Amino acid sequence: MAASEGPPLRVRPAEPGDLERVQAIYAHHVLHGLASFEETPPDLEEITRRYENLRARGLPYLVAELGGKDAPEGVPEGVWGYAYAAPYRTRPAYRYSVENSVYLATGLEGRGIGRALLEELIRRCAELGYRQMIAIIGDSAHVPSIKLHEALGFSHVGNIVSVGFKLGRWVDSVILQLPLGEGDGTLPPDAGEASGD
Image (tube, rainbow, N blue to C red; front, side, top):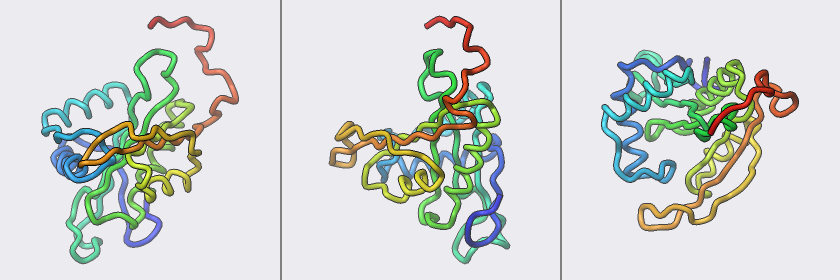
């Protein structure tokens, strides 16, 4: 898949060898940003545990990379960003809904990387039969992320005001939602089956 502008960008499933870079990208966001409400960056072992848990569930975990010869000047070769889908909630009735996460290396915003990752994540989740994708964006002032989701069809469904406190200030959560595939237009295949709590 290519980014909307600039040199060709490759989006592919993440592999264990990518996780050191994933951990570094995420650690920066944890320490310096409001996209994540974590305050202490998880180490590589914890990132690996989270990755393995999602992959064991069959959920997509993607990275975006660009080779050195194609990279713009000053941009390192390798993984530029990553995205994954996780269960929106763990109780059985939520089983057709996923929550997305997209993180980019610092300074690489506005190059189409986030869009390429999110488009592919949406496609894969729809193919897997999920019906709703939820985005919970930290900080209502994070306009680029909100605009990206809206450009891909997400609807704004709410704000949770001042729900977090990070980097010395109160932070909102912005909630957006995208129907996948048939959305709620049809019942799921196992609609008649009872499930426990």
